[in-house]
Image (tube, rainbow, N blue to C red; front, top):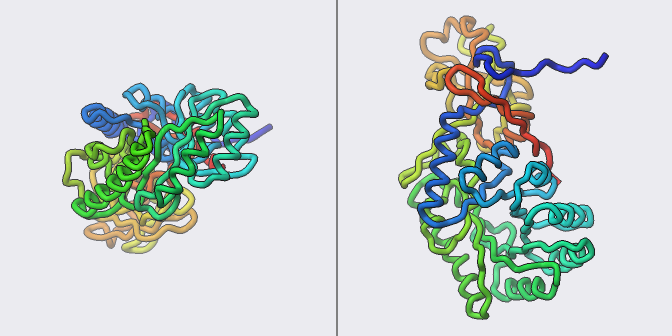
Length: 382
C-alpha cells in the first residue's frame, strides 16, 4: 500500500486546523491588490502583463487575465508550460536563453500560444529564427536594452540596430518592440530616490525608442517596470506594458520601502507556522525555517497573530533548516512555555522564492479556508 501524507487542509476548515507550515493567501487583501493594479493600468492607458514568476500559479494568472491583464510574463521557458496548458494565450519570456533544449521548448510553446521572447545577442536571433522556421511557427522577439540594471541587455544603439536587422532577416521572427527592465530600481527604499532612478530607466528606454524611430522602426511594445516603480513607469510616456508581479502578495522587502505615491498594497501572502518548542525563557521555536521561508531579502520583519494583527512580543531572529527561532519579550518572556502550540503568520521577506517552496496556496477569508490553488509552475526553472 502506498502511503501519502494527508492534505494540509480542506475547504471549510478553520485556520486553527491547517497543517503547518502552509502558504496562505488572505483573499480580502489579494482581491484588493488585484483590483487596484488593474484599475491603475487601465486609468493610465498601459497594458498589464503581470510577472508569473512571483506566483507560479495558473489559477492566479487566470484571475489576472479576467481582471484585464493582456497575458503573463514567465522568466523561464519550462515555467510557461502550465500557463499555456491552462489556456493563457499570450506569454512573454522576459529573459534570454540559449541551447537546443531551450529552442525546442520555445517552438513547442509557440505552436500553442502567442509567444514573445527576449534577445541581446545575434547568435540567439539566428538560432531561434532557424528553429522557428523548421517548426513552422512565428515568434515575437523583443531585444532587451540595459535600462540601468547592468545585467542583461544591449548598451548601444548599434547593438540594438544589429539585433533588429537580424530579426528582420528571419522569416519566422517578428520584431515586436523592446524590453527595458530595471530590477534594481524596484527595491530602492527612499521613494524620491526610487522615482529618480525609474525616470532615468525610462529615459534610457525612450532614447532607444527614439533611435529606432529615426530609422523608421516603430516599437509597438516597450515592456518593463515592476511593483516598486509601477506608478512612475505608467506615467512615463515610454512604457506601453507593465511587468509588475509582487503587488498581489507584497513581502517584507517591499513592505519596508517608502510608498508615498498613489498606490498602496496590502500584505496578502503569509506562511502559517506553529510554535513547536518553548523550553527556554525568552526563546520559542516554530516549525518553519529555510525549507519553508526564503530569507535572501531578510528574515520576516513582523510576526502576526491568526487574526492578522501584529504580535509585538515575538521577533523572528534566526532560520535553521526546519526551525525558526523567535525571541520572546514582554510579559511572556518568563512564561514562554505558554506559547507552545500557538499559531503565527509570517510575511516572507521575498515572495517569489518562498512560493517556489510550496505545492499549493491555502486561500482564506476571515477564519475559514475558502479555496486551495495549486502552484503548478513550482520548480520549473529551465
